[in-house]
Image 1: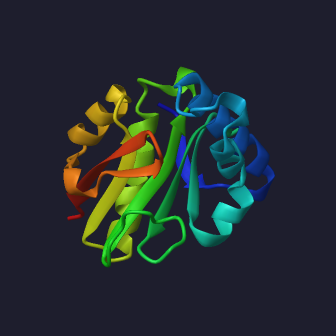
Image 2: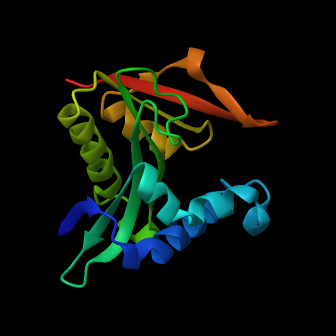
Amino acid sequence: MDITIRPVRQAEFGAVGELLVAVYLADGLLVSGESDTYAATLRRVAERAERAEVLVAVEGPEERVVGTVTFSAYGSPYAELARPGEGEFRMLAVRPEGRGRGVGEALVAACLERARALGLSGMVLSTPRHVLPAHRLYRRLGFARAEERDWDPIPGVTLWAFAREVA
C-alpha cells in the first residue's frame, strides 16, 4: 500500500470537503441527502483545519486524496465527546476504491499516534449505529462501545460512542 498520512494542504480543502460529502451520501449518512445541513459542515474544511487537525491519506506520486479524518483534543470545538485527557476523531471517510486496503486503519492509527504525542490517555469517537464495517474496524483497533456516551445530534439520529485507552 503506497499510502501516506499527512495534514491536509490548503489547496486540498475543496477536494476533501467534496470527498466527505460524496462518501457520506453514498453511505446514507446524510439524512436529507445533498440538502442535509451537515453537508455544509463537512465542506468547511478550512474552518476545521484552523481549530482541529485535518489529516488526509494520499496515494501515489500525484498524492491523490483517498481518505480523511479530523482529530481534536478535549476543549476543541470539534471534540463533541472527549473529556479532559482524551482525543476524539470525527469525519472519517475513505473513497470506495480505498476501502479494504488499510486506509481507514492508517487514518485511525495516525489519530492514536497524535493522541500519544499529546500525552492523552484516551480516544473516543461516535458513529451511526448502522455503519457495521466501521464498527468492525474500531473494535479491531481496540475500541469498545461506550454506551453511556451515545448521543443524538438531531432528533431521530442516535450516534454510538466507542472509546479506548491510548497506551
